[in-house]
Structure formats: structure tokens, C-alpha cells
Length: 318
Image (cartoon, rainbow, N blue to C red; front, side):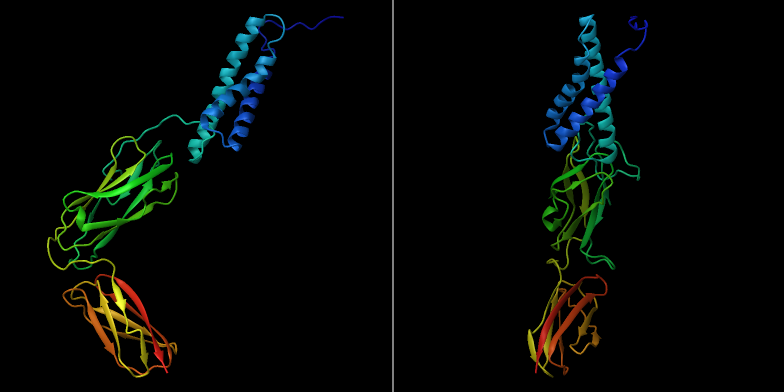
């Protein structure tokens, strides 16, 4: 019986061995990922999985040549597997990559990065790059926000956020600290509030996982005196009142001299509006004498210039 001879120059078993090596590497990588092993362990397992098929095929004539071919097939198969998973993980912004991703650094910025195009690697964008908190200017409040977004393709990890500089003690901040922003995610917001009359310039320093310096946003105020800002507005009531008895409403934390619109929501479902004026320290008192059915009265106050608002309630007894 004639024995089929392999033609010279034919790929022979190379193609099946290559496909087997790739399949073995992919399967082992998926298994180790599902077991939540470390990325390093996954690389080792992927290499072992790629080696199984070509090593089995080394039995026979030309043993050394077959071992060399098996090693080459293993290396090529592992490269294909690693490259494929890396492309997918980068494109999807996967926070737990199948295999360790190569380091792609970024450079810390001063909040001046512009444009909407996503950039490869680690990148951060802040909007705006500076804040003006002049409380006595018409139409402005003593608080503003900075939007922090991930403009790259890798997860952006926000660390500590601090205020530094000569005017740092005049401001306070909340939000965004110790958050992770995946690629294409919604931005987080940092709220900066001015707390004192004497302000000046400070730097909002945002620590992140970019290579290099942290990101900074300038916070400044031209106003160096005036009324002290004590935080969020407050509204207080007398607590309880009998029908037809006056109930004093006290407010503070509003803009000095602004008109404050008070809205009373009565138990019977109707409402009334009144417009007292805040004093030079941002406070006001309003005393209303009105008969009301028993129940809860809700009072809300909104500054017509600053937009600051607060709510309180009191109970009308029979």
C-alpha cells in the first residue's frame, strides 16, 4: 500500500497547530479571567495554553526541528491572543483587563485641555479651567462647580482633592474625590464654595492616576472685603402656631440687599407669596398674621439675585 508523502514546502501541520495554539491560549485566558486571577497569572496561563497544541505535535521525526517550530507557533499564537484582548479591552474601557495592558501614560494639566475627541491612554479634562467667586456681583453666587471628565481610553482614577495657595482658607470643596471614571462615562462635579469675606486666589488641586503633576484649577475672587459668607442659606420658623397667631420666619445666608420671595403653602392647598428684603448681613425676618386651617404650613424662600433657596415648615394647631 502506498503511503501518502508530504509535499515539499507544504504547510503540513503548521496551520492546525497554530489554530490549536490560539484556541488553547484564548480558552485558558477566559477561564483564568472568570476565576479572577491576577493579570500576571493570566499571561502565564495564556502562554501555557498556547504551548499545549504545538508541543503535542513534536512527536516523530526531526524532533528538534519540531520543537523549534512548536516554540515559534506558541510565541506567534500568544502574540495574537494578547493583541486581540488588548485591542478589545482598550476599545471598551474595561476596568478589569483580560491581560495586563501596556503602560500608556498621560501628562497632568492645568485644566486647559480642549476638544471633544477621545485621546488614547490616560487623559483628564476640567471645565472651566478657573472659577470667579465674587459674591457681591449681580447675578453671581458664592458657589460654582468644576466638571471633571475622562477624555481618554483608560479608566481615570480621581484621588484626593485639596485647596492650596494664599486664599485657600476662604474656600471649601465637595464632590469627585476617590471616584473612578471609565472611558465614555459621565463627568463628576466638584462644588467650590466661598466661605469668608476676605478671599483672594487659591488652586484647586486634583490628584489623579496620570503620570506627572496633578491637575489644577485656579479659584479667585477680586473682592477682598464685605459681608462674610457663612455657607448654605437657612430658614427657620416658630415651630407651632394657633390659627390667627403670628409665626415668625427667619432666614440667613442670602445676598445682602436682595429681595427674597417667600412662598407659603397652606394646608387647604392654596399658596401665597411675599417679598421681604435681606439686610446687610444677608438675613431677614418676616412675621405673617393670617388665619389658617389646622395642619402643616410649608414656607420656601428664594433669593431673587443669588438664586439661593431654603425651606421650612410649621404646624397650625386648632
